[in-house]
Length: 191
Length: 393
Image (cartoon, rainbow over all chains, first blue to last red; front, side, top):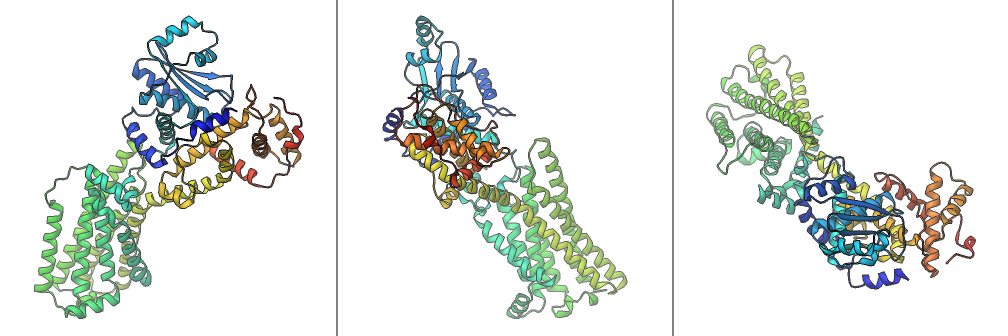
């Protein structure tokens, strides 16, 4: 049933090509601090947290259900909480973490979802949740890519992972562009 | 050897120059490098016997192609090569005409004056055995080869320094090592030819053949190393693209079946054909997306699959004769096939999601998925769905 709801949500989206999304995400990534080496999503979260002066907590979710997002970011009063599906494969877990971090890096804002936070943190009292959400009411979940924010976060996450997995930079990289007029022209105008 | 030098190499260099021509609008490095190859291609084409005969006949001056035009083209190539190395080394270049080009121009004028004013314009000028004792010819050639030695030494030294710097910065020099080797052999060629001229002056023509063969070998190795250095990066990129497009297409059927049932996991409009994938570029990024989407879809399907489906799939894979780590691959393929069938049958979502099978190593995940896709693509030896019977709601 949940799948059918997701399909309906998704009908309006998906018009953007990969290339369009990529161009936007690359512009964002170029403004971000360098990736940690060796790279892990956890190390990246720690680095971003240190940079922003707000810790980022990564929380694996044991409860998994088709109608729950596989990742969530809660901007709480004194920290950011990134939840991810513990049942997902390591590759997908990394992607979920990076997706939620990308929301944070892009400055996206969602809607308050107290019910969701209660499911994620069942031990917190309702009063505490109210207090935690009072000042920074931001929640983003990874379900589908039918909104511009979701598409942007997912592409940025993919780009971060791709860049992290890339081989060390080649000094002869410019030789790749010998036949790429667009890149060559861009580089030429920058030089 | 002659056919290689006079036919294969000119063709390769002309093709390479045309291929890289668009980069003439690029950076100074790119412009200088492609200029170097264009001049080298010109020099080698001018060395082709048919071109020599045709051009000499056209200009009405015997030996002008071999003695003058060919050498001028090489001077142009060396000036561009020096400029390329300086640009690569990071020296700030101004918009003014650089002294390197001014020096190359002056040398070209000097050689032209020597040729026009002091050298015989006939076929004998080609015959080094008769050059001995002729001051103008020896001066002409020594001037040219000494310039080669200078350029070879300078470019090799700068490139080696640059390679050391790059290694300290944890960058891979890649093709620059081969370019440095090409410059070194170019310098050796110049030194060898200078020594050759001195031998000619001193002893006459006793070792002409062997000297010529070694000269041709040094020149050929130098040019081949320069070409190899310039194509290393594009060829590596091409191989990576081929590998990624191959993997993308190996995953295509598995991805299509999964995303047909779970379309919300697809980001944007991914290119579907191999040509579209190449045109879109970033094949490794496309591959990562495809792997993530497969895993995302499998995680969603796990919400509809019974908890013991994985155990059943593993038992079925073992029973089908799979061995070693292939058992998990076959089991995963069987699990996906069964989970898709369950989903398509309209089974309701379970309150607790089962664990979808997957690998545990992020870096090996795509390789593993390619194997799973291959197992999935084979005709299933076991169909798990009928054995599921009553599924718990």
